[in-house]
Image (tube, rainbow, N blue to C red; front, side):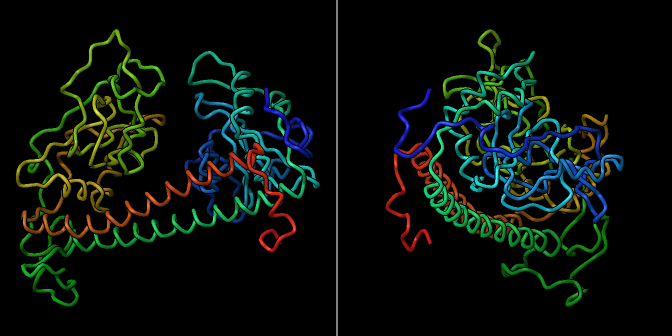
Length: 446
């Protein structure tokens, strides 16, 4: 199964490295983070991602589950998802740090390493390698591709090739250095996003005057503002139903598709996840079966404004993206809508309006449906009250936001490059193709 063992490395199974393994319950929970030092939370599977551990992806447990200290995760634990759709089973992460009173759910396994095996990042990396992932995938079973799982025993029997202690220490330091660069770039992106949100707030409450500058705020120039259903707005503006500025709204189609990404030559249907992050992701799609005839009228095109009509999470209903570019032959699903504006409304500005906090507040009050699925109707979308600006103001606002967007895109490209470098280097180090012996006992490793 493995390539020849590098000098000094040893064959082990996961069970040889751990002091204990544990899974928790999966009760019905409040869909919010814990808010006090008394409350306990349970991790969602989305806390365990290939990008790293996310302690904020948790729900508040019912009170009868509080205090389960034997299931509480600690820094240094390794977490592995064991139930869900195939692409979400076997995801591995180590916990560098975490808030207290969080436990694992029944859809994941926590591994607590033996004291002599301190390098949890290395163990998580070994479990992420191709051979270990194939071993788990071969032992994953279920009635459908969306409901798969493997046993704790399968995980504990997963074979690994373990580097010696001194090499594990250096590999951990190399990984931490790469992770630091990635975190710093992510922090820059987060800061730019905050700046962008502040600018959007000003553009949609104060706007741009004839000189191309932001109007002074109302407390400095009250004569420039008037009252409206949206509160105080510039006198040149009106507050109108969004439907007055829309040509039409188009719905989609959701045939039964396998969980396979379409190739460039195949037709596909966008998943809701293509939109919900606020960034258009054309790789989030399912292939259209060959026996079904595509509907070209539903094809997504550059310049489209798309929003989610329905989602299990109410905060993700009516999330909107602007399609700046897309691969061909992707269609809207029936959980997505395309907003087509009149000529008096720029598509990019429409995207701003849908993300405006006053619009989001209206949407939150309108969303309805069962506990498993929340919806918003086309009629409700048309009835949203939004500010109406001249094309001049819209255009200047778009220019200012696109300037920040360009900087964000550059940082995202840098982040992608760093992640690819990390993946390649860690793959080399964790398979022994590249040895770190020359770094041991040198200042870099001290």
